[in-house]
Image (cartoon, rainbow, N blue to C red; front, side):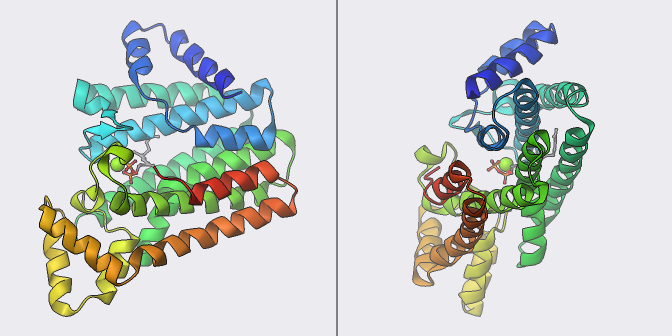
Length: 298
Ligand code: FPP
Ligand code: MG
């Protein structure tokens, strides 16, 4: 069924009747289509469901195109990002085109779904702005970080699950909560993998978040465990190109203070909540999606 979503997106792109846009779209890597998987598992398979998943994937893709410009990121999913290969202007406009076409289609699917999804894009944008602000200097504001994480990543997953529930008349709140927990855990694990996985597996340089200015939870937890001299050292490495020696120091300190385990357990608690809520509803496939999340390697 994922193929039906791929075909629908392709059809939406072709309808734009612009050769360059079609060429650029076809060059972009597809990603895991996690939001589509959620929607299809919740709502099954009919045209409205396929259209909803397609528009959400287009919005997600648009947000990543803009995010790579904002983050000055040169790789995405193991390939050159669009801003790297074709420049910021092309990446921004391609994002705007995908985003506006998605909204044009979304409003004729269901006003209720359009409301939920558009609200999540407001959150997404507020989250990205908060991320930019929080990345300007070293901080240990966990509440602000978690709020930003919810807005930037969890809100669109929450909206995907809720949209699926709306389309088939299921309990909106239960699925919405599931999507939010999954989204938060997803981003927390993403933050951990930035530290633990190698750059080949990640498709981007490792330990890149800290270089981009992002003080993710593991760095905050680490800071709390360091003595004052080491804290100053950690702050001095923020936003710097790390030497292999600095990288080694960060990883060793994380290991010494069991930081990865602590961060991972926090994500795991959210996943466990997601699993038990879906098992209570007899949604085996959805609980399996949550289980797979804590086992993911990239
Ligand atoms: C990736 O975060 C970024 C997001 C999930 C959201 C980005 C949102 C916007 C740019 C605003 C919305 C814009 C539109 C057009 C809908 P990250 O940088 O932490 O993750 P990464 O490692 O995958 O880059
Ligand atoms: Mg980014």
